[in-house]
Length: 277
Image 1 (cartoon, rainbow, N blue to C red):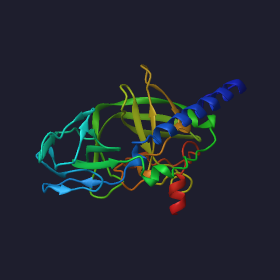
Image 2 (spheres, one colour; image 1 turned 45 degrees about the horizontal axis):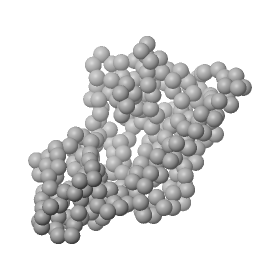
Image 3 (cartoon, rainbow, N blue to C red; image 1 turned 60 degrees about the horizontal axis):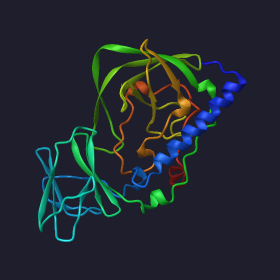
C-alpha cells in the first residue's frame, strides 16, 4: 500500500474530487450513453428504426440506409442525402468500432459489437439523461491505492467474455495480468489493452458487487511503467454503461477477475438502479 502524509492525503482527496467531477461531466454529455434512446440490431432486411431516419440493413459487413425525401443525415457536418431514395453505405467497421451520424438534435451511432451491427440513436432529451442524479461513490480511501506489477504473457491470449445483453460475446486480446496485494491477499487481474496507447483496462467484480456496487462489472484503467510497475487506484473504479441502461452491450469480467475481497472504493450502484430495485 502507498504511504501518505497528511498533506499528501489532502492532495489525494482533492485530486480524486477533481477527477470524479470531470468523469461525471463526461458521462452527462448531451450525446453520451445516457442519451441512448434505442438499441437496434441490424439484419439483412431493410427496416425502419425508431429514433433514426431511413430504412436500415446490413450485409457482408456493409451497412445500408435508404433515406426518403425530407429525411436527413450528416457526417462531420456534411449533408449525405442529395436525392430522393438516396442509399448510403458504411463499413466495414472494426469490432468495438463505430461512426456517428447526425439527424437534427440526434446523434446516430452505428457500431459493431460481438460481431453484429447495431444502431443506437442518442438524443439529449432522453429522460435517462434529463433525470440523471449523479453517481454515488465511496469516500476516497488511500488504502485502496496499491502498487502492482504487470506481468506479460509469453504470447497475448485471446479471451472471450460474456456481455450485458444475451446472445453476444466479446473477444479481447489480453497481453498479461496485473499482480498485487490487497487486504493481506495476493491477487491478480487479467488485463485487456486499453483505449489510450500504452494503457490497460481491467474488468472486475468483488465482494461488494450486487450489494453496494453494480453487480455485473466495474472497470479500472492503468498505465504500466517501463519496468512493469503499476499504480492501482481502486478509488477510480468506474461503472460501465450497462450499470445505467439496458441499451448497452458491455463486456463482463473474465471468471478469474472475480476478486475474493471487498473493494469498498470507487463508484457505487447508480441512483437509477437503486430507484428500480
